[in-house]
Length: 149
Image 1 (cartoon, rainbow, N blue to C red):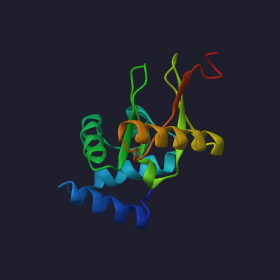
Image 2 (image 1 turned 135 degrees about the vertical axis):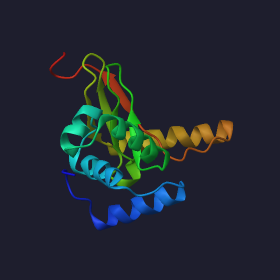
Image 3 (image 1 turned 120 degrees about the vertical axis):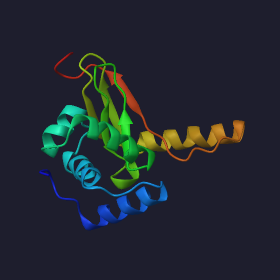
């Protein structure tokens, strides 16, 4: 199977999480994680299949679902025909998304310190008022990308 190689640290984390979820490590799952790690942005199924080489579409869907259940992959739903997939944030770095409401493109953007302070303050206030304790957050900004604007 073609596609990028998977680093030892990421392979160990993948193995641990899949076993904890009662799932096996397979060559297809390793390839999917490696493709997402190398991409640097959320990918659609067609983009993943192209980067992976010989992976069948049905196998990609089935294995991405298992990886999502194991906490390795995060699915981003947009308003176009394809969801996007990326590695779970704790395997990469904290970031947010720009989602184009016209073409569905998703772009990662760094988490700005001022925004992070505001979100943390809001989460603390919510915890005081409701007892709900936030474990993590994400901010998706919806609008039009440069091409569609």
